[in-house]
Image 1 (cartoon, rainbow, N blue to C red):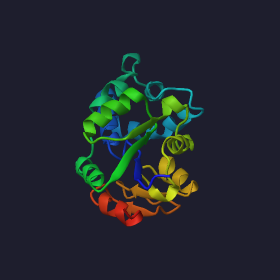
Image 2: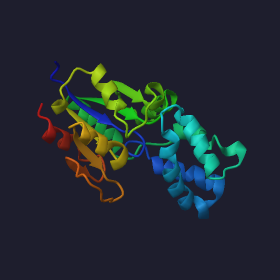
Image 3: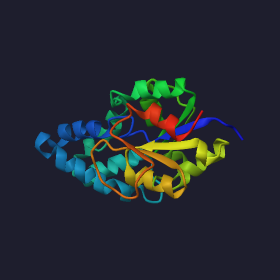
Length: 215
């Protein structure tokens, strides 16, 4: 059993500016005045399209755009745009510092391999591992991402911290598994259960990780 320390991350919304990328595409397709409403609607319809895990994330995004009323030639707009979406400003520095301190990094994402590879290039910091929904045929808040992680990484849960923006998709299932969680609460939301730690962004993440799991 290794004594390594692992931090796992959701990617979109946590590391990559997901809402910003979504909204730009929705504004282009539907117009600026409808962008906020369409973004809210997107978040409502997406979970039902992920049920069962049979669809790729590219298919989920296209079907969501169809439900939002996009023209047929724009149903693939989100998939075309996603590889160019940028990380939040503090992300590269925080992840690089965590690696300097000895943390191993992994991504557990509700997406496809080509999307996550493009986003990891954008982030520009190495990850040891990335587990994606389309390859395990399961979307969070299901538990399969974490189950696959523990199949591949021989550590005890007390050496692992999960970091994410989505309380529903990530914090709740990770805590069900008895894991320590850091909720990146970028939007000032209020939800139960309470995570192990709560931060507004990743700027203080390296110190927080060290507080949770000693070297």
